[in-house]
Length: 327
Image 1 (cartoon, rainbow, N blue to C red):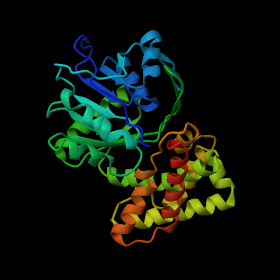
Image 2 (cartoon, rainbow, N blue to C red; image 1 turned 45 degrees about the vertical axis):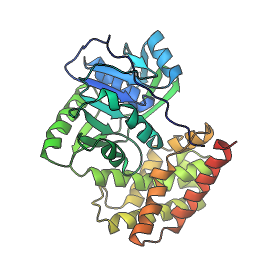
Image 3 (cartoon, rainbow, N blue to C red; image 1 turned 30 degrees about the vertical axis):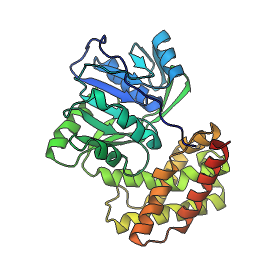
Image 4 (tube, rainbow, N blue to C red; image 1 turned 180 degrees about the vertical axis):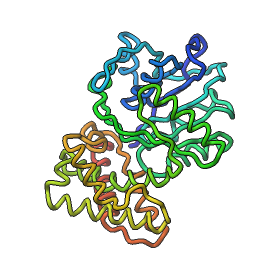
């Protein structure tokens, strides 16, 4: 059974502004905490909303970041959102899992205005549309990242790989906002870039995730084994090829010439990683399969493109999920 992302409105009245922009991160796990912490370290006001044990550790001992940088950052963190009269939120970043996004978006209704800018930073396709459907009058930006980060324990973030954060836009009004956000990120030490072709960037990453993530999750292997084991390598190739065909049918301008070669380059560079879908399976959580291979299956049916390997792998991951979520 799907677990709802548990959030209600956080008490913000007594938080005083340190910077001229107020950020709120919904779903502050590893990525949200890293971004929020680094922005706070340059004087921006940041509020984290996350899981209770993580929030408790941050409030008791500060947010600790290790790895590529080492910082201890005092930052307000909450596991719930209570009604507030405060209406000066400039940006709300959604760094939840893709399947938690709708519930998280609904929970912020009382703390945003039409001027609040919403940013989707999830794996998978169409996540920005989930937010835009709920808030049609708000500006919604899409971002995608390749940074390496994990949370070894509550309150501690391990920043393992620089990567790149791409922030996209659809028109000139959004371009200016996105450019300012990119500038702030770079000031904070987050390598960021303005991306006019965000759909191409997102789809390029989704093709990689289609080939890599479900195989690592089903076969319980680190990334490199999807390349080393010939059977898995062939399956990954077919999964990525099908997703690539869907992208071509949609006339998506991918950010790479050959996404299959790109996928295996990513796999080799992140060979020792336990990817997010494998981590979800090991911790018996719902995965993001619906927004990755599931979206390719959905689009394949709509476009009359055969995607048999994606259909098969999607069913297998859903069956695996069901085996532990229903128990």
